[in-house]
Length: 312
Image (cartoon, rainbow, N blue to C red; front, side, top):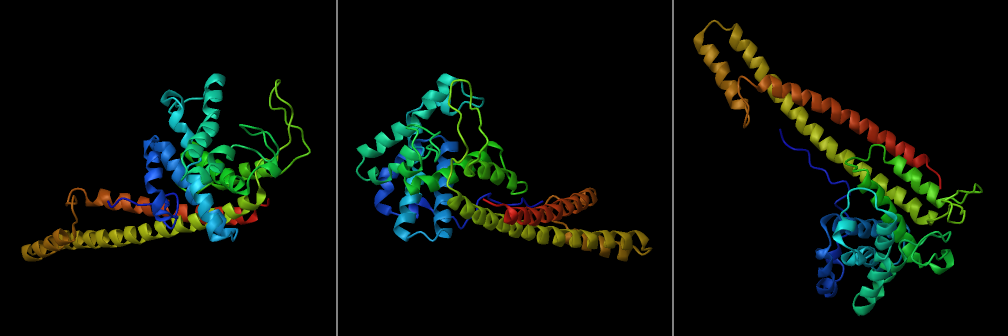
């Protein structure tokens, strides 16, 4: 059975290496990041660029945001691997070390004249509009707009990665969490006994609304991929139904010549790995796969309806 091919993010994403060839040598250092951080950096850069496009940002600013988003986690190069690659929850001490990747990334970029313009990515991407972020606890007026956009892309991809999404089904749950981070509330939320109580309002709602449009685009892309696979499955089911029809005619034929004729027809229709003994099982698997994929398409369309109703 042909494998279904689908990338969670639309392949229309902007590619880092296409943006500025003069920066290639300076960006090679990103290849030293672990696989997951490198992929996350690429995702954040691509999402950032697409959010900027929906916000109708100027081309030069969009390219700046993409590159700043790409290097936003560059400071993790200097965090011990046992912390960055730890599968479980970090201890308080480990978390404090992890948080230094913002400052370390900023310092690294500032020491490289080519990367210096993009140091706002590492330096500000964990700052929150309400002052609850790090490393400096800045508030909205002091956080560059580029970093406010990057934060939305970073938070979204972090949730997607953590939950190991392979489809956009139920992705609206992730967007609801981002809405909670975007909407200031009169309800006081106790962070813990040692910290001040703060209100929500961590991320900028404007890029978040643009992210909704990006997610809808990617959901439609997933639907198109699944539909292509459904077309393939339906072709295979039709072919195997013909095999099944030939087998019935072969079994009902009394003449050996007709039996050989239909048997030869079946053999011509078999694909690699298929034979007289297993084709019915393969047909059953295709029929099951068709039901699953059609159900997924319905759920994806429902997901788009939900996202369009979300308000921020």
